[in-house]
Length: 326
Image 1 (cartoon, rainbow, N blue to C red):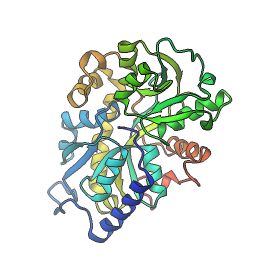
Image 2 (image 1 turned 180 degrees about the horizontal axis):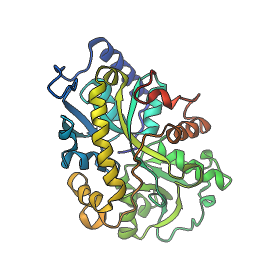
Image 3 (image 1 turned 90 degrees about the horizontal axis):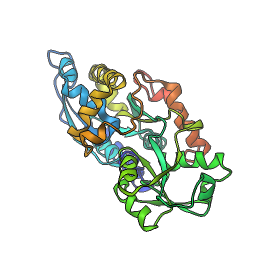
Image 4 (image 1 turned 90 degrees about the vertical axis):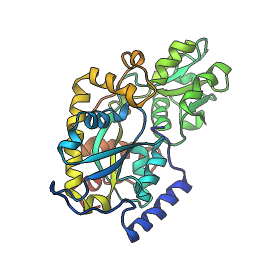
């Protein structure tokens, strides 16, 4: 899932794989530059089956990558940990991943470059849900309660903690419980958890199927318009393949512009790579699709991670953008 966070063991594994990659080069087959001048024309890109990656699929379907001389093999991944393992292990050249996982991996010594910003939060797209007849009416009522999240110490817990803070609570006042998004509706109905943090399309489905109620939008105040996901490559790949990276960025920018300005295009592409059907795609709340890679915006994620203790010190986001040395 989009926000699954690498555990310490996985982070350690990523570091080890990066060391192997540095010794032996990329795990994908090397190419001789072709007529297009690209260092590598065939690339494997990881993507999650969620709305965040819409522009990637739009760019591929409309031939924007081909126009740049690229042949893109989009490979489905299920979460940030898997995506980054595959990236650092060499089976992927680039991948979509969430920023919390990205910055944690960077802090652990894995050198990454963010080449495109894909998705940002929008009002009511990431919400704390409670059961239909729940007695919980305010986030303040969550004290001592169990809250379902898809992954511990990731964007869900980060954003919930921001909401709790505005109601006089801390993350120590609730018990976060880990469940996959598809399981959360049942856990709410059964009373296994008192609340659940859900993104689309799950929050629309849980309202329709079990009458669940919205308790609080988690993307407000400190997390308003919060950066969620982007496309990353290793620093080594960016250094060895600057023309390829630039071509990817140009193609993605075209797809991102369409996603940002034409909701119908997003609705049409979602059923082709997700389990979201056309009827649901037409009504879900979508986040935003940024059309530029903004260092200041991304630094907000790092700052909040430091504030909440996810990082011991700040990471310089500028050093993670193409054209800069890490």
